[in-house]
Image 1: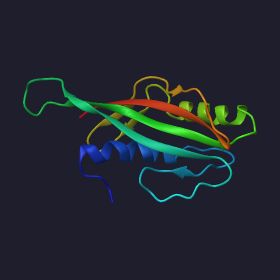
Image 2: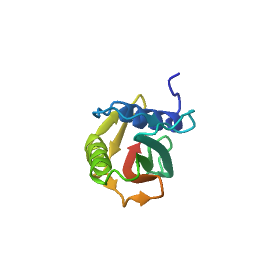
Image 3: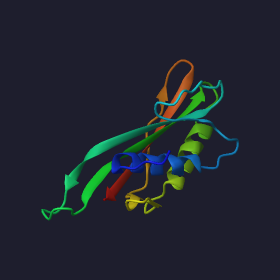
Image 4: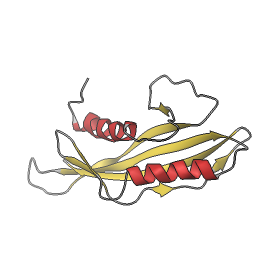
Length: 139
């Protein structure tokens, strides 16, 4: 089902773009609120984090600025080193390069800066590396 509101169109565009990421080997993706059984190997976890909207003009019907973060966390088993998960994080950052525009029925959703590959989170059985993708839309 295609989204019909701005609040649905934006995450639909971002998550669709994520689904088009080509990795070798392929890593499954855990999407927000979709049943997922984590494999014992690596995978990605997606979080859609809107950060509200702002009225940019006082004219009725003028666009609002919507902004937020798509966070994609790279998850790998512990004990295999940090190179491969960091490389995957870099590939995600490149896939959502600064200036990427995702066309929607409401207008473009733009990635306004290079995504940030964050510090690894290490626990006893896995390493997680968050990639924060800032987006903005004037809709």
